[in-house]
Length: 463
Image 1 (cartoon, helix red, strand yellow):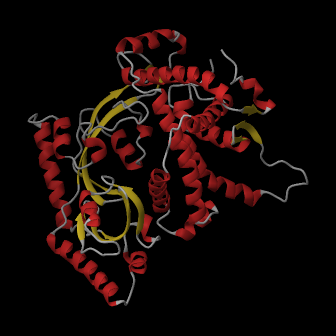
Image 2 (cartoon, helix red, strand yellow):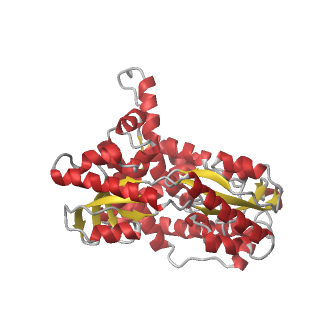
Image 3 (tube, helix red, strand yellow):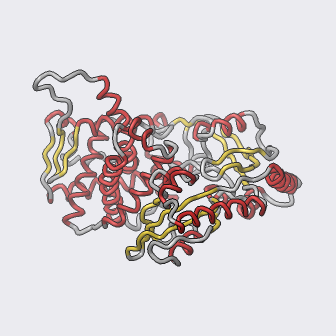
């Protein structure tokens, strides 16, 4: 069998690498002199039916995988990366043979969302996008669409191949016992940290002011003194869509805020709504098009700012809740589930979790926010902070209290402390075994040609 142990971990990196690589390509192009005649800048290292793998694909994905390799586990080799990219192409080829379909509409919805995220990270400035990536918005969106379609096909094939798969505690223990004692991964010190978050309630006067402003913009459009797209570019506080004249792209039902969706779907094509409030602020919405169960809108978003008194009110609320928790009248996890307004952590009792394993134990470096990192690093185990202000990139000023539940010293992996990590590793091993078996059968149904430089990887040989 092939050694496909990194496939599931690497598959998710490929789209990210393809998008990010635009920046690297631009830098390299700036450095290069005119190549000598016949000089090869890139080459095809594998073909699977009509799809190809380039040497640059291997290099970029390898570098990305190394930088994102899971702490405590062996990093992938170039052969592992090459094998994973080859399996990707094989899955795309087999999907066509097996009639596993991803519709253009599905890809378009996801591509629009991904592109908006990229643009939002650049402050919504299309000129900055061209400067950073060396591509126009249309070129970058096309690249995202192509890479995303392949990723979605691969994910759908993965789901078909591993459907219904699970692992039992006995399987986790067998996996753990199969690892030689000297080969057990070494984990750095870890912590368990939770938060309860509140968003300040904006006073009615500030809300009414924003609603009146949006109504004024609607009147301008109605009188013909301005148009929606121009006003969105000038005033909308949604950087991802403002540069596009407020256009969000196609979404399915249930993917946008309920209030936004209900208003949008109640409009006729081209009609503009009155201001509607969601958790993100106030929107003025125009329905552009409906296609089956999807719809495309544009909006102007204005976020009413909380006053200092609004913020102090939220701080007093959390301070009172903190006292109740410290007095033992309610457990932190229960309070987080009932009162926290952070959707990413509230369902988990307020606790941050490791995205790789789902475990509540995580290294401090997993916490990407440097303020959060240094706050936890200065706390005592078991303590809860006083309410602290922080800035949410999408929703502005928020307040939170942090609970430093526990600290785990650096150690060799063991069943008691690392069950969730070992369970995730067992699942990956089981998936990889199934994928290896599938690969050896599926490769007979397609044409595969591998560059001699990668013969040493032995990816087509039974093992």
